[in-house]
Length: 175
Image (cartoon, rainbow, N blue to C red):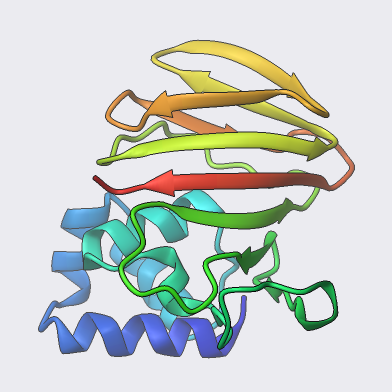
């Protein structure tokens, strides 16, 4: 886990005047887990990060560099690695976008077991590897060049249960 990300999460939580218990109640994650994340002692799955961001009412991109241009060029691409996944915002400099594109690399075994719901929609396109997806209790495996588009208010989660990295394009909205 990146200590800087944990520190930033703590700053946002405190700026919202939330205790760890209140963040726990909103996110469904335990107080001890959240405390360890803030102190950089635990790794964070992408699903857990999304739960925290939803509870804090911030977009995941808030914690990652969006760059200073609308163009995301190959030579300027930098991924933020948090241990279980790498995340690259593809938003560029646009403020308040209607949807959030991102490139995500899920490391082998990156897994969040509990389905959850949130506002908006998600479109996930598998660039390489395979992705396990569960929606409303129905499980499906997506392979390279396959995708899914869902209403995020349906109980869902997706993860990499393989021993290789899975690369994704994620486009999400919160509306």
